[in-house]
Length: 199
Image (cartoon, rainbow, N blue to C red; front, side, top):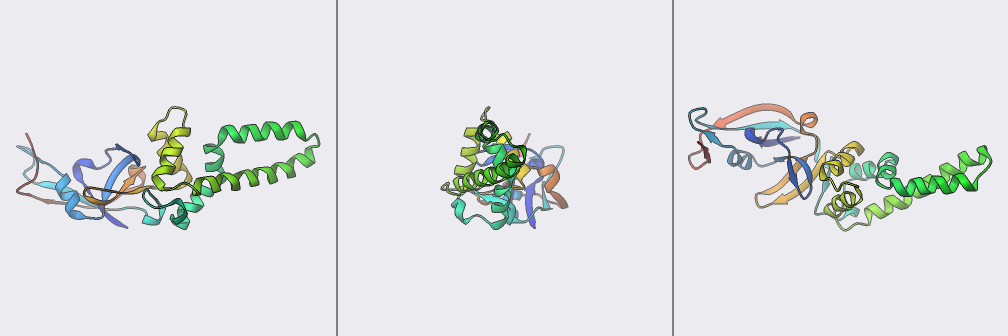
């Protein structure tokens, strides 16, 4: 999927309420206006046409969790994501199960059933959140260090490429791992008469 980014912002991470990553735009005008001219170095603005993963792989911060894409659902339903997000509860389940079951054969079958039920219950908790932004906040609250970069990394590890959000400029995408997921197509340049000039 094609998008645009200011040359100045290429691979430069920002911390937003929707995560930590690199903001890109579907609107070329936004990328143009976010680029700067440097006196005595460049006499023009530069921005890039880029290729990024499909929009369906991004968590929509404004939509209810129930209306996210099926691709996002698949990522959030993964056992690794659920077990990492609810790690302390999963450990408690394992300890309680270990003390209740003495027969190793029973343990294996019962463990599978219990962890499947646990995963389903926790996934339902996740998709009952009011919005994608609420999910970001929920993950960040559960993160011991409350580090938004780690919360973004957890979603990325599950397969979610970033977040879809709106700001005063319009609809944007925040790329969690721009180095991996942005493929430059071409650099464009033009002197914009009313653009910012860096001295």
